[in-house]
Amino acid sequence: MSEPTPRMVQCVKLGRLAPGLERPPFPGDLGLRIFEHVSAEAYDLWKPQMTILINHYGLNPADPEARTFLRQQMEDFFFGPGAQMPEGWVAPDAEVPARPRKK
Image (cartoon, rainbow, N blue to C red; front, side):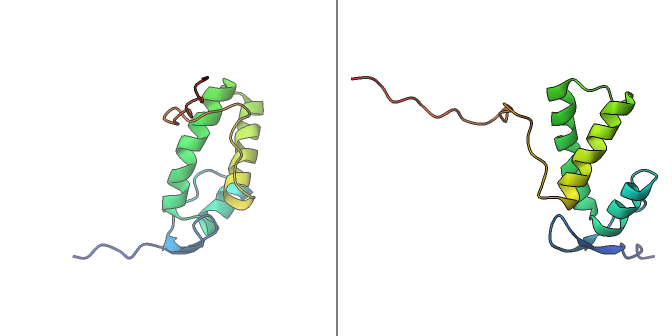
């Protein structure tokens, strides 16, 4: 028996047709909007971004204010110009440019 064909969406994040999520990631308007316009691949890109935000700002995901902040960031990530990295954040694997030596 063959596997069912995945549901395809025109992904706003990737800018192409791609397999969508199997169901909305959470209830509400934003969850439905993500389900309709974000691919599963693009949604997977949000997870490390969310972790960075939680760790950088010391957020407690059980806190309603933290959840509101994360949903706003998620909306920007998918439907805005893209999530901005926290101020002062540097990727853990980013190379620091060497300083010129004094002569």
